[in-house]
Length: 273
Image 1 (cartoon, rainbow, N blue to C red):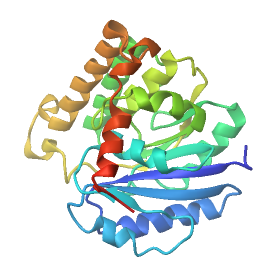
Image 2: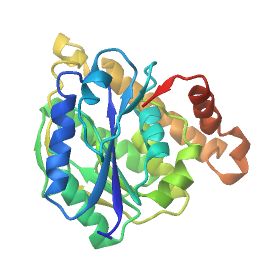
Image 3: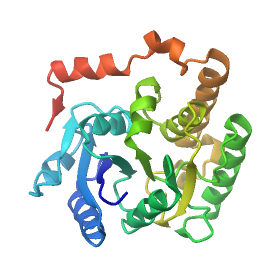
């Protein structure tokens, strides 16, 4: 597979202080591999100077895009995919909680297994992970929910590093509706339903620090964290659309709205490069 181009999409929200370092870190990590690559940072709303900072990087294989209004990680990833040229499409979160050297590991797993999808997993036995015990409990609980609802044979679906064959995303993305909290599980569950069964996990190097954003630092109980509540709500909504409404099946094609919405926003000049 290593003669293929890899597109690396990075959703960016409020990372003006780190975005240049983030992008250059990915460049350095990928330059040490034999993969040809492009990096597409997608600035999800002009709420700070992330777009201007990212634009300071002048590299032929770095293409910064963005739009005015924050619309969530799922929307950002889908927009990046629409601009990607690669045969393989990788997604990695900004902020470098995930060591960019992990990219080479997930790509090697893609090659070894001839996989449809490789998921970076905190629960892989070879992973190096640093995050607090409360989040470990949440991660375990969410794994059980996902296994029960969708039957996916994955121990971790939420780590922000994954790689897909382009053919998978071309089939799956137009059907998706979640723009924020449960985008990852919606994509994986729909891909599995459509017959893309070669989904495997790979180790990652992760250092997660939730103290700045999580409501847990204010003494809230776990279920009161708004992000966690949002993930659970959206996950149940994905189950309802998948198993009850069968919204993602081919016969519901006329209900899929993403392509029309994106086209409208491009035509109104809201998207920038």
